[in-house]
Length: 123
Figure (spheres, rainbow, N blue to C red):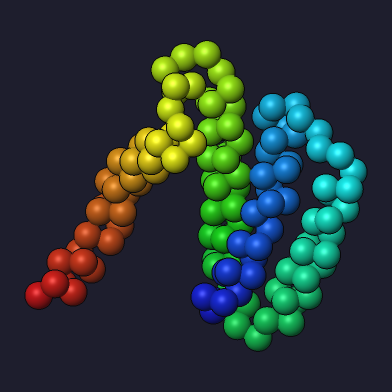
């Protein structure tokens, strides 16, 4: 699918963050916050519905990315508030730790799936 479509779907990340925050932390935001997300949802819906190069795989990847980024944001916020070693980190330092952890977790999968392509591109 088109890269632009993926970025349009990624605009839903605040909606995912609000939903994950409500489910994981039990924090329900004020109604105006959710209401402010409606135009974004409507715009993404129109953009996806009228996309001539729509790809279910790209759409699914973008939605999965939204969910992962929402969990990162919500769990990072929880880590900064909870007692323990992560509480002493600044927000940028915690972001770095989480990013490093995600890279370590994803790197073997990326190497397994894309390693041959990368080696061929280098040659």
